[in-house]
Length: 341
Image 1 (cartoon, rainbow, N blue to C red):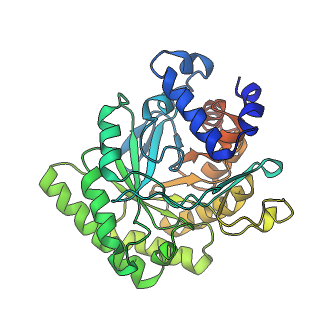
Image 2: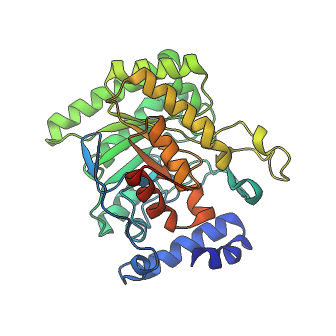
């Protein structure tokens, strides 16, 4: 079904196609049509960050930035959804065009820039949804927030989303907000995560329930940086890590007419770099620390490779654009059965 529709979507500008696909799914959500077109994967429960996921294949942040499409996406068989990135205040993101398809590479370049309507709009969308599955919320800082005040933005996001999220993700790895990736290193990382952990413990006491927090990291770290990240996650007491975000390394697509567009590269060229980071994180963090693998999963084999590298669960985004919603069930079956295509 999706393969028949894809040529139509690909004739449209990428951001228009993105909006049209989601709005179409939203229009029929609740009718049962989505479930009939793309049957749910078999149950394959897995425990991650203290949460029981119906299956280990989730939606990555970025597809639904504001929680407008939770109900529709929840009918596609995902074991969990992650929405966002959301910032405390609304912001328009970067000028258009800011989203580019590279079909020959099954890749996407984006420089969206955390376009969203802010925390209050997302909260309203979540409250209006019927979705009852595992929901993660990815929080970031506003573009115009000074670097030395970044923690305040993250704390605002955590506090506002605490009662609505099953888990929270701290995004310090998008390449499209100036200076954001600087928070992944040295004292800046340690100070940021220590402040977040302090807020997590305070909210647990005041609100009466615990919400696990993961950190989303970049694929462009060298081995020393990955080692430092792992040490800091353990030291501070974070609950999990999501590896990885998009890459600024466009070397795999430079011959493509759009390969030099500014922004983060995702899709098939990201598969091995992100898996390499997962592999090192697992070696550094030990066997029990939760790792959610994301990046370049365009086949069930790619999903299985991330599990074998040490991921506890996986997330999809760009692969859905090229392969369609059936990829969710394909990946879930492959992980459950230990083989993929």
